[in-house]
Structures are given as structure tokens and as C-alpha cells.
Image (cartoon, rainbow over all chains, first blue to last red):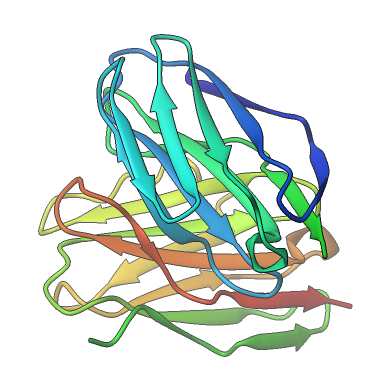
Length: 109
Length: 112
């Protein structure tokens, strides 16, 4: 059974204070690791897909990296508008995504 | 272009009643998914449609839950004889084949 564990559950940062969010996974035949951002009362918004260890993707202040066992979402110099819940998901041998419970990020001005 | 839309945005129903939730996927997306999100929990997979293939129903929690997709586009999730534990946000997503999934805003279901 595919499993995704995200840590920490919540993270509070000061504006400009860089940090990383962790996603550990076990999956049979990884066919993609996905990062989503979810704002309160809204559906998840797609951020990145990573397919193989060593791959990196960047978008503004966010950079996602992938190893064989985990993925990191690095946030550089965050701003209050980066506050959201960040979800990690994996797709294995079938086309279903298995999601972690998410990391709630709060960035104080 | 237009994203995934869902209706209603909120639904309050009495225990024991049936409800129907609607999803309009992104035009051209062949895959459609339903998930359930409860407070403090991750997204729980419910059902997956891919083109004309038989749907993957492996995530449906009981036989009170069913879904259909008409004409390869609009989908309806039906919950019969609702229970309080069915209260959650129901999310729909669509994708091109097995690509990235794009989510709708969700339907918040409250069973009283």
C-alpha cells in the first residue's frame, strides 16, 4: 500500500525566514510525486510534478526536490501570501494519487 | 480557460436523505476523480473514471456511495441515506490521461 507522511504538521515562519517541508513516501513503482497548495475553503492547486530522484523544479520562492524516499519543498524568503496548506501526493502502479495530510504553513509579517 | 467546477458549493441535509453532487471537468480531460476531505485528514480517494473504461470504485466507503459520468464529461456523485459521518468536503479533479490533476473548489456537505 502506498503511503505518504508529511512533516511537520504545522510550521510558523517569520517573513523572510527560509525553511523546508518534508514528504516521506513508500510506493510501488513511482510514477510521479506531486506538490499542491491548498488555501482555506478552496480545492488544491497544482504546483509541481517530480518523476525521478535528483529532479528539481522551481517556481518563484518554491523549489521541490526528490530522492528515492522523500521530497522536500524549499521555501526561500517566504512572504505572508505563501501561507497555506501544502499537500504531497504520490502515484504508483495505478493512476490514483495517495495524499499526505498536509503541512500548514503560516508566515508572519 | 475554465477550470473544474462543482455544485453546489455547500449542501446541508438531514440524516437519511439522498444527495447528489455535480462535477464539470476541464474540457478535453479524459480522467475524472472524486475525493473526500475531512477536517484534519488527507484527501481520501473515492472513485476514478478514465475515458470509456470501467471506473475504479475501490475507494467508495460503502454501497451508499455511487458515481456516474455521462458522455465522458459531467460526473455526479450520489450518497444515499446520508449519515453524519458523511459530512466532509467532496472534491472533484480532472486530468489529461494520467497527468497532473486539477481540482475544483469542492462541495461542503453537512449532514444534520
